[in-house]
Structures are given as structure tokens and as C-alpha cells.
Amino acid sequence: MVGHVTAPAAAILDSLPAWATLVRAPNPGPMTLDGTNTWLLRAPGSSAGYVVVDPGPLDEAHLRAVADHGPIEGILITHGHFDHTEGVPRLAEITGAPVLDRAGTYEVGGLGIRVIETPGHSSDSVCYVIDDEAVLSGDTILGRGTTIVAWPDGDLASYLTSLDTLEGLGPVPVLPGHGPALADCAAASVYYRTHREARLEQVRAAVDAGAAEAMEVVRVVYADVDRVLWPAAEATVRAQLAYLEEREKP
Image (cartoon, rainbow, N blue to C red):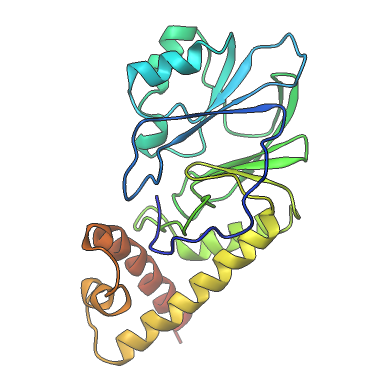
């Protein structure tokens, strides 16, 4: 789910890793960019089945296109929002593949997959580090623009901590839940944190100027944003207000 910044947070990746295949769902929109990115992972030359990350919406043609790539060994999700998970039961039915636990490490698809918890966008967000070569970031980092912190489930303090975690991965490629792949996870994480800190200052200034409700803050801080995105902006503003209130307690 995208914020109102439209530029990528880091350079766009020239080409995907050899073990990654992208099948983009046909659900483009203001909150999903070009559509949900469904990732199929398998080591080149491996006889293993694919691992599918984020099957996306319940769209039969999309799910069939995913299944047609070959045998599916397992299904993973980055977080529970419907644009990533609605198609999970149907894909499992089509392929017989299990939905894997989102914890620990896996050796699947001929790849080493490590799960890292990255709450913030949602309380259940995780990312997947693949052979320490790249990270699948879900909606924690997007390929274009910035993400929302989906209050009340999302939490800004947790999100900032998650950005620290992702920065620590270094300059590895980012395969996001929406938008193009990025070349540098650390750079994208720094960009996101800088953006969020600047937005916090704008929110604080709006409150100091008399904005008493979240939507009043949205009207000031997001005045130049298409109003179709204001509900998402309001959720993020509520998360920011909660963060500021907690930090400013005596």
C-alpha cells in the first residue's frame, strides 16, 4: 500500500536474480501501484518445486498463471492484507502446496530462506532474505513511493525499528510487494526513515498550529495528494500521532 511519494526509494534493479520470477497480479490501483507482485522462487537448475510468495488477489487467471510455471513446493506470505493473501486458499487448492510457517529458516526451492520480523506496516509483516543475496520486502519497502503504517494494526515505532533491521542487510536487492525491484536495501531503508522523520515534523507542526483531529492534519500535510489516498493518509497520521503522544509523555 503506497504513500503519496511517487519516486523510488533507491535505484531500480537492472535485472532480477536468476532464482526469481515475477508474476504481477491484475489489480493495479492507487494503493497497489501496478498490482501485487507474486514472486516465484527456485534455484536455477534445481529439481525442486517453486516457492510462491504472496499469491495476491483471488483472480483465477492470475493464480493459474502462477501454477502453470511448474510444481509449487510451498506458499509464503509477507503479511495478511487481502491484496497479498486473498488467493492463498485457491492456489493451495490448485497446486496442493502447503502454506509455510512464517518463522525461522527454510531450505526450499533449492534456496535458503530466512524469515525476519518487520512489523510496522502491519503487525504481522515479515520479510524473506534469500541466500543472503536479496530480500523480499512485502509492503515494508515498496518499489515506488512510500508505504503506509496501517493504524491501529500498524505501529510507527515498530516500523522505524524494522527499517533499522533492513538497513543492516546492506546493499542487497529488494523485491517488493508492489512496484519495481530496487538495487539497494540499505539505501531504501535510509530514504524511508528520512521521509518518515520529515513527515513527523510536518504532523507535529500541524498539531501545534491547531489541528486537533487526524483528518485535520491530513488536510494540511497531504493537501497536495489525491483525495482517494486520504483514508490511507489518515491511517498513517493516526499512527504518527500515537507515536508522538507516546514519545512526549512526561
